[in-house]
Image 1 (cartoon, rainbow, N blue to C red):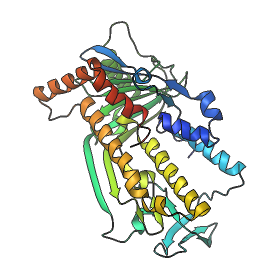
Image 2: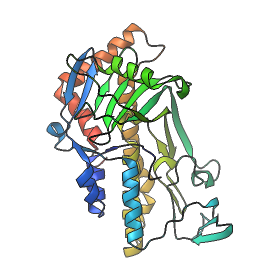
Image 3: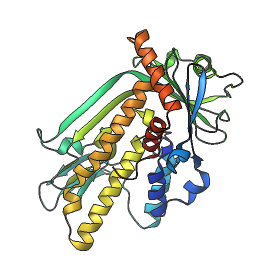
Length: 352
C-alpha cells in the first residue's frame, strides 16, 4: 500500500482538507505546488494559468504518500488498522447493528458497528453486499489504455504537459525533483513485454518533443505498467447502514486527475455526517450523503470524459474529428472563459 505509485495530483480542496485534519506537515514540505498546466498540440505549447484564472492551485504529492500519512496519523492516535485479513463478509446492514466478519491469523473475528463505510475499492466486498436490484451501474470502457513509467530522471518540466499528437496522447508529470512520471496512450490489449525501455523513450520523444528547443530528460525506468481506461458510477452510494466511497462506487479515467480527490471528498462528507449523528443525533447529512456526493462525482465524470476525448486519438478517428480536437484545444488556449472552465474543474470546485 505504501510503495505502489499511483495518482499524484491533489486539488486545492484536498490539500486544505488534509491540512485541516492535521495531515499537512509533510505534504506542505514535500508536495510540489503547481499554478498551471501546459497543453501541447499542433507543435505548439500553450499554458493554462490555473491560479491566475481561479486563485487556486494543485499540488503534486503521490497517493502512496497520502496513505503513509494517514496510517501514521491513525497509529499515533491509538487507532487500530487490521492488515492481512481474509474472508471479509458484511452482515446485518439493514439492522441497527451491522457486523463485519473476517478471518485473521487463522481465527474468525467480528467487528460490531453502528455504520459501515465501504472504502474497499472496486474489487472489495462492500458493493457486492448490497442486494441485487438496489444499485444502478453506469459505465464506459475506452478503446485505449495508458502505459505509465516511473523514471530516475529529473523532470524536464516545472508543470504537467498534456500532449495531443497524431501518434496518440502523452503526459509528462513528475513525482520529485529526481523522479519523472510519464504516460503514453496505447492499445488496451498491448503487452508490456513488447515495450522495451528504448521503444518507450522513442515514442515519448516523438509525442512530446514537438516544441523547438525542448527535450526530454531520460534515465533508468524504475516501473512500467499498462492501465485500461474506463468510467464507472454506481447509484445510490448508500444502502441502509452501508455508505460507499471512493473506487468502490466510482472510477474515472486519469486524464482529469480526479480519482483520489473524489475519494477524499466522499469521506469528508461522511466524516461530517457521522459527526452530526454522534454529536447531535442529526440524520439529514447521512440521509443525503449519496445525493450530495453524486453531484461532485458526475461533475468529475464529465470533466474527465471531456479531457480524455479532447486529448486522445482513436483508431477510427477521421481527419474531420482530428480537426475538431485541434479546434477545441485552440479554443481553450485562446479563450479566457473556456480556459477558466478547464482550470476551475482541474483545481477542484469548492462546492458542487
